Length: 110
Length: 118
Image 1 (cartoon, chains in turn yellow, blue):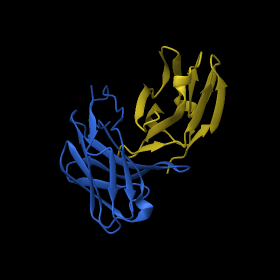
Image 2 (cartoon, chains in turn orange, green):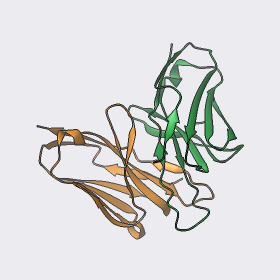
Image 3 (cartoon, rainbow over the protein chains, first blue to last red):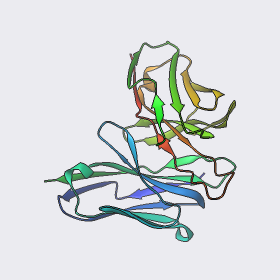
């Protein structure tokens, strides 16, 4: 089956710093999403981005489907950005099977 | 807004009990999913369903079964709960991509159920 990798696994940032999170996937996908898991465990949708670039405030994402990777940019990080960031892909099979990467754990310190 | 609701936020059950975790979505999504999340292991797919009464095994179906009698509801069943099933369980739903090409297939998650088996 499809493999999804994320890097780095852990990241510590000073408040105000910028960061780039990466997601690599091993096969063609129908779509790709980025999620932020909050301290209570809920997965919050950040971006639905099968290709191209999207921006939402201090966050933006780019997916290059032909090269099988996606990047999540966080600018001017805040302590509330802390948590785990997951990318998830819907692989191109008969069914919409959504597979998650292992996540990047981000800690933003004041 | 899409809403995915899981029946319980926290649940404590005894070993050997039959446990039902319920998930309801209100957006007429074809696909529904059950995952479990454990420290160091990420989110692993247990079962998914692409239509009423249809189900497919995910990566870790052992010890679980599912039921989808209505489109909006997807139940996860632990036939005989064991301590190694203590985990965070997450339900999700999405539209099928087999349809209008313009439709997005974004997945939406419920708030999660923290199950402890003692």
